[in-house]
Amino acid sequence: MIVEHTNRGDDLERVAALAREQSAACVVIGLPLHMSGDESEQSRRARRFGSALARRLDVPVAYADERYTSVRASDALEAAPAKASPKHGSKPRLDDVAAAMILQAYIDANARPRAKAGMT
Image 1: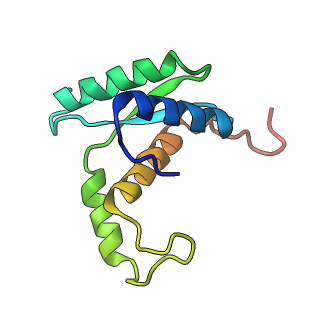
Image 2: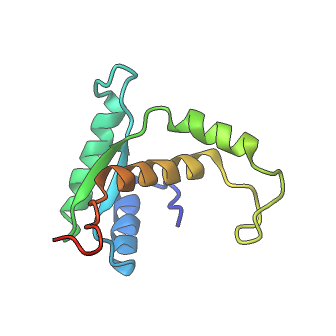
Image 3: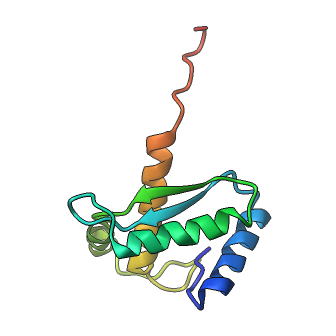
C-alpha cells in the first residue's frame, strides 16, 4: 500500500496503523544518503521519522540505503511494457517502484540462510 504524505503526524499514524493491520515484523525506511555514503539532512529527517514511528510500534524500525534506487526504478519502468496494470489501473509511479526495490534489497540483505535438507 502506498501512503501519500500529508503531514508528519498523520503520516506516522497511518504507517503505524498499517504496520499493525498487516502484522508487520519490521518497518523499513529508505535512508537517502549522499553518494559518498554520508548522511544528509534528508537521512536525518528519515531517522527522526523512524524514531517517532518506533515509539508507536512494538516492532523494529530498520533503515535501508536508497542510493541509486530512483535510477534503477526509472530504468525498470522504461523497460516495462507501456500498458496499464489491471490491478492498479495505471503504470506504477517511479517512487512506488523505487520503494519496492528498497524493500527487496533489505529483504535480500537480511535473509537468513536456510539449512540444507538433511544437514544439521
